Length: 134
Image 1 (cartoon, rainbow, N blue to C red):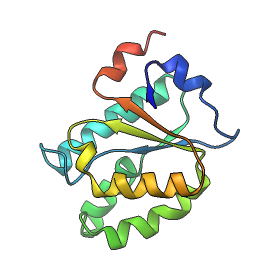
Image 2 (image 1 turned 90 degrees about the horizontal axis):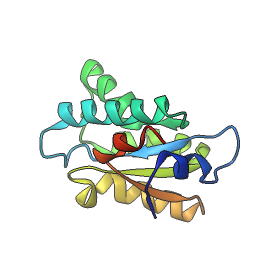
Image 3 (image 1 turned 90 degrees about the vertical axis):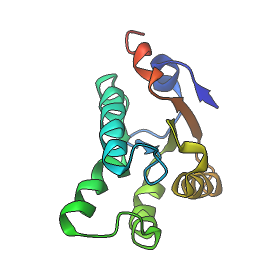
Image 4 (image 1 turned 30 degrees about the vertical axis):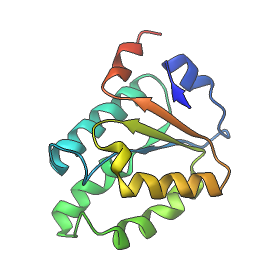
């Protein structure tokens, strides 16, 4: 389901005291992983500013990969590390930015959320920010 506004996102049902997991392209982002990280930070910040409870694994782990010299492309590192946090979250928000539909990581995240019967919603980016004034 494509979310059309912040108002709609705020009323989407997830359990209280949980958060939306923000899925976004990383290795498939056509402008590179540093640009993917910057874009995801902007999108996640926009969601936070709008009062949406979110967690972005890319915003969190990209600087860890860079500074700890971990392979940022190794799904065998990142998917197991992310699984407990995915399971603790209330639902999945897929940022529809360039590369999202061919992202292996996003496809795996969707599988986890579907298997857990948690909501999966899609948000168009960069157009999300036009809804901030809802």
